[in-house]
Image (tube, rainbow, N blue to C red; front, top):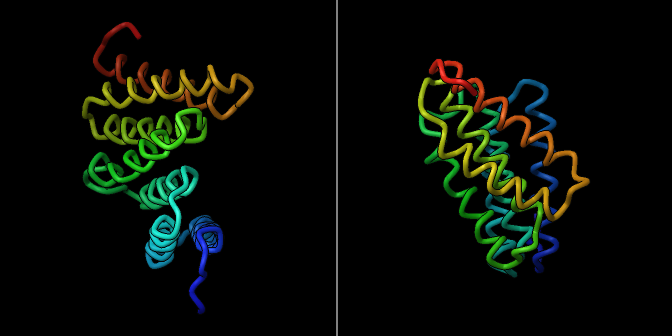
Length: 168
C-alpha cells in the first residue's frame, strides 16, 4: 500500500486497523499482527505531526490489545506503561483534553482490576484513576462514560476492601 504523506492519513489508516482489530476481537480472535500494525501507524502519524488525540488513540490501541488477551499479560502495569505515557503526553499538549483524562483513568482502573483479580494491591491505580476521572467529570459533567468508570472504580475498591475484611 502507498504510504500516506500527512498525519491525518496515517491517523485514518491506524483507526481503520484498530476498527478491524475490534471486529476480529469480538469474533473471538486476538489479531496480534493488526494490533502491531495499528500502533505502528500511530507511531508514524506522530512522527509526521504531533497531536494530542493521536497520543490518546495510540494509548487506547495498546489498552485494547491488553484487554483482548484472554488472561492478560503477567504484568499489566508494565505492559500499559506506554499507554499511560501517551495519555500524559496528550495532556502536556492539551491539558483540557477530557478524552485523555478519561482514558488514562480507564487504563488505571483496568490495571487495578487486573491486580485485584490476582490478589495484589490495586490501591494506587484506583487512586490515580479517580484523580483523572474527577477532573474529567468536572470538565465534562454530562459525559456518562466518566460516571460509569468512576462507578467501576468505587465498586472495585469495595471488592478490594471486602476481600481484606475492611469497611468499604
